[in-house]
Image (cartoon, rainbow, N blue to C red):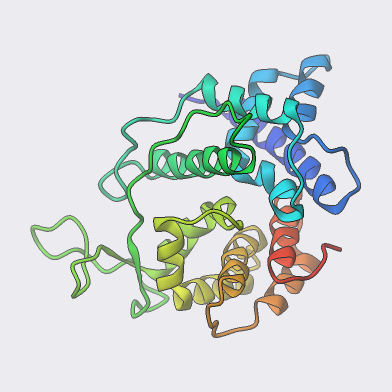
Length: 275
């Protein structure tokens, strides 16, 4: 069981790492992101390299966002650090089942690991030391017809979840959009898979989810879901709202380094330079 103190330490370290990634993306920091973060933790009196490596796993492919979005190659020390982070606690094989059949946190982490290892191997296949993460189970599809104030539609008696007429697992758009937001680090160019297919088939659910989070002033969630809308816009999908307005609104009112990074990535996906 992870203690509250350890959870806080990992969260703070992830925020610091997000700031490094944001600085690198905006050209105000060094070329290295993860390597510099782990090195700083190793040399500091109150730092913990293990916590710093854990922060890499929390951010996932976002650690590589400055390179993916600018076309630059990560330095050698960067790829080695990311390989160390993935090798210290290898991705679960086979990966856990998708919720509700499997534990949600473990399944989400499996997808984040997949995004990190896949992005790393595609950025620099010759030097990538990262183990290939197994492909987790596909997420449920969004049921756009579910009323916004109700929980997901209950599964039929004797079943384990609701299904659409095509037999695909379905889930109400409120929890579905929040879960997609937790996988926002996958909303990057060059990554594509079942989660991205779910985003393409759930455009309305993502638009509703981003709007709901904005109205609730939950700007971290709004920024993560809006980032998927920006990715869909870059993918050529038609959207029921303007993702730029949501992105700018979140950028003005949202706070925190990870929210700022999500907003900066969304701007890049929309073709606007990060401010």
